[in-house]
Amino acid sequence: MTIRATAPYRSTMGGVRGRSAAGIPLGVFAAATIAASLLLRPAPGRAVGRGDLSGTWKLDRERSDDPGQKFADGGGTSGHGSGGGGFRGRRGGGGFGGRHGRPAEGSGESADLSQDPRAFDLLSIVHHDPELKITDGLGREHVLYTDGRKIEEERSAGTMKIRAKWKDGRVVVATTPDHGPKITETYAVTADGSSMTVTTKIEGRGRDVEFKRVYAAQH
Image (cartoon, rainbow, N blue to C red; front, side, top):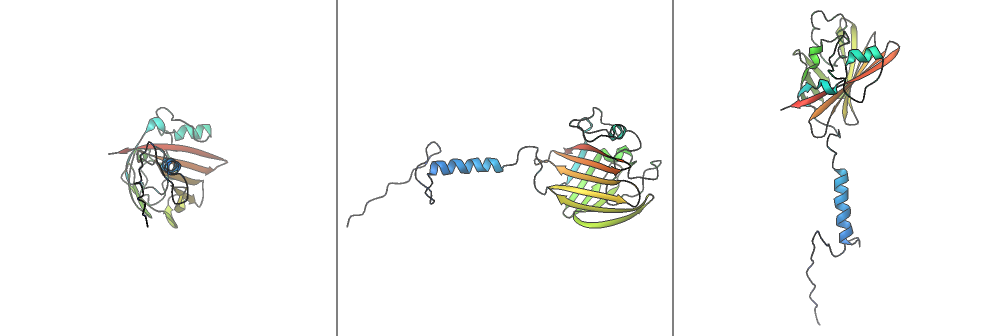
């Protein structure tokens, strides 16, 4: 009986020879695999999956909306920043969910819609899902839970019902007071972790107002 020696398999990226187990030419199989891996790779700057919000975040005013101007215009979020992006007026930014602490002196009864603008200049976040701790620029800690549990708080404006949850890879925090507009904040971090966008929507009082704050990661 004669045994024929099988020629050794040779493969290079320039010319892949042979066939896969499914009978597909290996050159085609390799090209398809590479293409699929490129398609599955997240695009730079794109928020995907359940990200980690941990970090120190500094407000980028050039890329952020001016909430005071948004209330004056009565419009939604713009596609670009508002120049200085200063949070002027009593409606400085919309309320965080979670534990607020005492409102700043002279900020008015409703701390939720009249936050001291300095509260939003710098955010320090420690995220061990489902617990999410946010310390604002005034040193106040806000505690959220992303598993959807309801938190009730007694504030000067009344009882606040707060829920946080994941939706499409973003953390959504809904604050509903006994009286007054509902506030929804959406936190999204880019895939490369370089920036975070917080979109605030205030519903009620005959109209909805939406604005965004963009933060740059501090290293």
